[in-house]
Every structure is written in C-alpha cells, then in structure tokens.
Image (cartoon, rainbow, N blue to C red; front, side, top):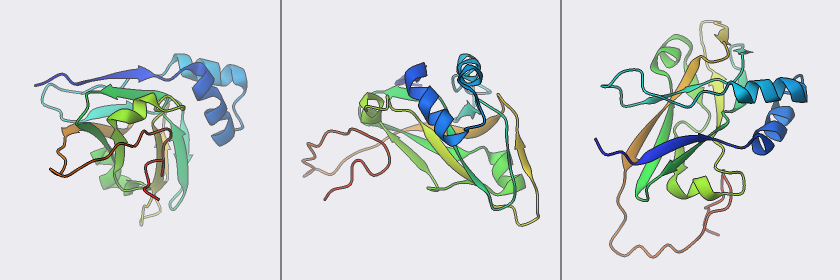
Length: 171
C-alpha cells in the first residue's frame, strides 16, 4: 500500500463558528470541549479500505431529516488522489443514511482553501420504516476511501481552488 495522505484537525478558529452556526445550542465552552475530543479518521482493520469518520458530537435524526456535520477534519494528500466519502455501510443499510451529495469528493487542493479544507457532511435519514437515527459522540457515521485518478491527455486546467462546494465550477 502507498501512503499518500494524512488527516489533521482544522484549527479551533475554523471549527468554532461553523459549529455555532449549525448547532446554536452549544456554548463556546461546549464547542471547545467537543474540539478537544475530535478523533482523526482511522481504519478498523488492516483489510479495510475506508477510514471511519467519527461524529464530534451526539445528534438524532428523525426519518426525512437532514443535518450538516462539521467534522473538524481536513485531509492532506498527494496530487492525483481524491478522498471519496460514503455513509458507513451499516447505517446505510439500517437507516438508508445518505450523504446529500451522494458521494463526497475531497480534492487534493481543498486542503489549502481558506476554510482549511474543513470536511463537512450533510446527511439525511431516508428511513422508510420510521426509524430514528441516534449517533453518539465518537461514533463512526461516514467512511472515506482514497483513490488515485487520471486526467485526459489534452487537459489544461490551471485554476486554483479557494473554497468548498461549487468553488471549482467553470463559469
């Protein structure tokens, strides 16, 4: 296996306002405590392809409800690699948990964005069986897989990323 990436936490200065915006019930002190407990993604076994992402805090999702999770994580990787994000298999199977953009794509240059490459996950409990999804702090809810990719022989992309969703759209 090639070792091509490293996970880092974003700074507290990046994490704090995003959590405050999405979860106003948390005080600044609560968010600092949450930040300190963030776990970097890791594989469960040596045969696992996916790196489990752990929820920094507890939350509940009723059927049909969505939530945006600031993970507090950023991924530094070599060029020509991408991190693809998916729901954890068991949660997808039991609750039809879905990422709202189906598959999250984290490009190698996202790490250098103004938001420090902060990985966010907007997820939906798409349960058709009325099941409430309960995620505790530190529970794995998403997995990421690093994949190498190629480009076309006539590719001449020169743009520089600065942002997340929609920041690389060609106008």
